[in-house]
Image 1 (cartoon, rainbow, N blue to C red):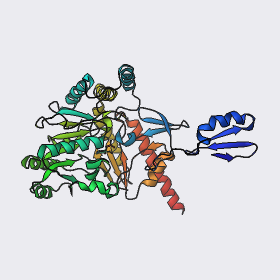
Image 2: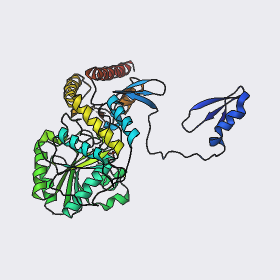
Image 3: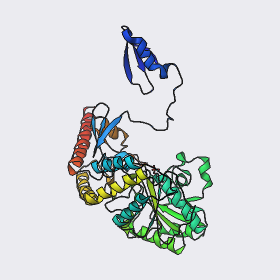
Image 4: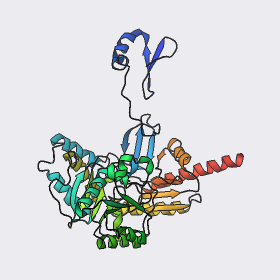
Length: 427
Ligand code: PLP
């Protein structure tokens, strides 16, 4: 679209409001440059399902993201808990670059030794060597496959999930997500029962009906707002699932890969799930997900399948993530920085509750935090996350984050709070 801009100049305004000047002297050539937009007035738009912050990242390194104006942001959110080993880690960039020059993709109809290498490394680092790995492309897809496998295994269809759970957006994954707004009528075909966390009696009553194929649970709720079951509850869930021959699925999509201070968050409770689902931190931003299946569940040809899942490039990314987590002892760093975060948070009087584990953390205030998060982004240049709990700030930094970054966050928080209080006093 051409808009008048005075003094013999026009500006071309596109959908994203970027404005560029056109000089009359070489207008003809500039118009021909604009042809793809001006000669065809129809322009494909994005399907507008995301409310966007007005920030355009163009590069990132470790715990920092830089926007198109050169402004640097401290990333304490990792793009929904995805960045595990830090943005553009040199080993990661090298491995992916090297792989794409050899082969980026071939289908799952042929041998792919990178999948075998990934499975071996993942088994070793997580302490789950006995499990079998099936690779896919996202967290929702991992949960979808896990639920389907549980249904194949038991011959049943009902699923037990927990209040405030989030498991993804695909058919069964969204059906076990406790949010009516993101469930379409189509998803109601699934038979799902939501129970409260830490209520083993309710679980026992439901399982006794003998129609359940799976119990799916996040070790620490992410989108829900960092609530978690007690060790006693998790042990009870494991026992009841065994007793009723129901598949226990631990959704480690967000909490896995060291984020909780152990490789998997369920390992804080010494339980043994039947299926573990992974994604997010697994590829440090490269789309990859997977399910880890206990040896008691046997594979059959055709049960699960995918075109893209486990492709060469995704495997290279995921192998490099595991190598960096191990070589740089990132899980130790998680525990050290987490302890520091808890100490700092305790000294801030405005914080009512500190939730979560490791670097999967929530700070609960006694007011809604949307404005505070905006100030953190636009004034202090710090990314944080929100959740279903409107009073809670979610912190999911890269696992490489250091104490100095935590200091910067608390200083920012403190100064914003002081600012607000002094404004209040002036009123
Ligand atoms: N499970 C959990 C616990 C999640 O937090 C998410 C995403 O936030 C998902 C599943 C869905 O993952 P994806 O967005 O990769 O499909």
